[in-house]
Amino acid sequence: MVLTDDDKSHVKHVWSVVLPHAGDIGADALTRMFAAHPTTKTYFPHFDLTPGSADIKAHGKKVAAAIGEAVAHIDNIAGALDKISTLHAQKIRVDPVNFPLLSHCFLVSIAAHHQEVLQASTLLSMDKFLGRVCAVLTSKYR
Image: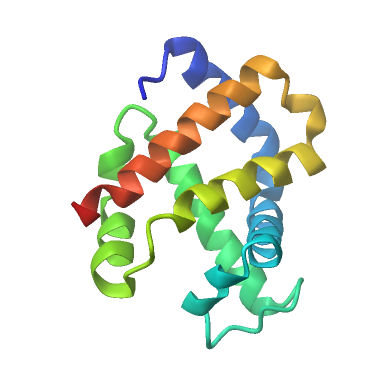
């Protein structure tokens, strides 16, 4: 998925709006993912998966930070997420199908909390961007 200059501009704009609340949106996305896709909970046996728990909030911040890194390095997402990609593929061994599930939940969380920023064009750009993030995160599985 090639991100156009317009896509990059839209993603950076959306992220500038989301950034002050990025950890909360990350936590909300995880909560939504666990509720909608219960099999994703298997990677978190040591977590308190209750919505709003300290574990969910802490991991939500990590998810948001990774997405923020990808935004900050939008021209080199693979380089920015290399360590995270390797960790998930080789150590944690997360089923790669889970990344698009979280990506979708992240978009839903943005829409739920900042619907004003997700117009048709920005939504498409964010979807392409998160698709690119998912492709990078699954690249180490091959």
